[in-house]
Image 1 (tube, rainbow, N blue to C red):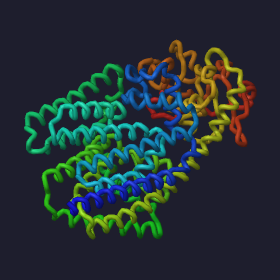
Image 2 (image 1 turned 180 degrees about the vertical axis):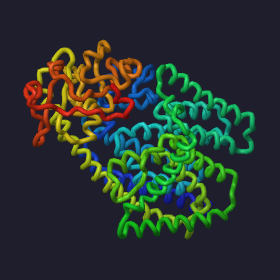
Image 3 (image 1 turned 90 degrees about the vertical axis):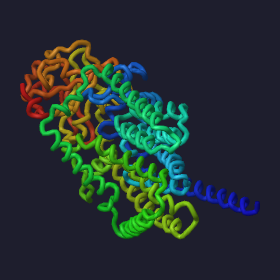
Image 4 (image 1 turned 135 degrees about the horizontal axis):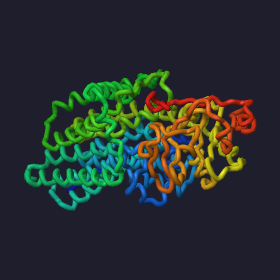
Length: 564
């Protein structure tokens, strides 16, 4: 009896210490991330906000196209964008807070899942702490447009928790909950397919009391959920552009090249070694060495069937994430170096977010025997954790500060454009607004959606087409009818084929247009021209129409899209 009481006291004391340690980790994550609250939007963030403003209702994304290009079907992610836009408008700090809360929730789900997989609270905590503090995690969280990844992984990890229950009890309620959560993850982003593969691995290695017929039925139902998703996607995206991938030549070479790029980037991002200097590099080296030594020792511990199950599920989650992304990465640069721009560091982190969670699950499974008792190995693991988490948090903090500064460069230009456009007399038809002399490729790429994302009153400019000397990736506008004559000097990228040049979105349309060089200004009486000078936009419409200032309009798309 006295021995039992002692064990209970030790268990409660250990739980209290873990909760305290967890609170400290969350505080560290918030402190590292806090610079972002003073930041602004970047690239696709504007697009997500603008799209949300054009949607007629929150359920629109489930029944129609909602992302430019009609390749992706992520209605649940867009529903969250619709809700956050209605709640927060264009207040950046609130959107960053939502992303941070989602990331912390993902880390919590990973802690719960890994604890139950490994049957060790300590192993679960180590995995969750490493995930929460690493630059991969906070980098993905920094780019608001990566909200899809956060949401997809949250549902995936929750679903894997119920999949684990099913692998040990064959309870059909657990299976139903798992299938629902996996479906929600898939509706958030396609990367959730990795969770389907991990669940199948869990069930293939289920407890011996679970018959093979039960396992096969569960996997068949998993495939049914996938088929249902594909059916919904096909119905919502009747002209979807997924065929662009299959039409590419030398597909095997592209897949192999994408795999090579992902693996190289994985080594760079997982270690983040190139951006750790001084004592941080030394501390990280100690941490990596201790983890490697402990993992080698753990490999020679008894391999129970459940431990094998944990490692298999984690590796499948990690590797299936990689395989899903390889075809898309053949033309990417995922290197990490001192010269790498913060924009690339942050936006590319998403390629490793789910894979990082999977690797940590597998590593926790390997280290589980060393986490079961309060021994020297457990203390060394604690030292390794501290040696890694501190450099990662400081690197993440630097990343957040640098990213904040990069976004603020966009803020001055966007807010100045909104202010100047608000003073214009907007024509009823053929409204075109040109923001000249910005010499900023990021602003040129998102000029139309940036203005429509943050302008206080969208209605007056909802029919306008806004661009710099280059057309943005896409325009989003209310267009009653598609008439090439009304677009001049803008023109569809593939001629007058409306099916390739427009895509319906709520009460508006995505328009994929290009500019004709050397336009006849007499055909553009309704156009407005603003020039970026000394931190503000000056109306030079009179000079342009008088011919004293001729804007140099350029085609900045691929050669086939620039053909007249």
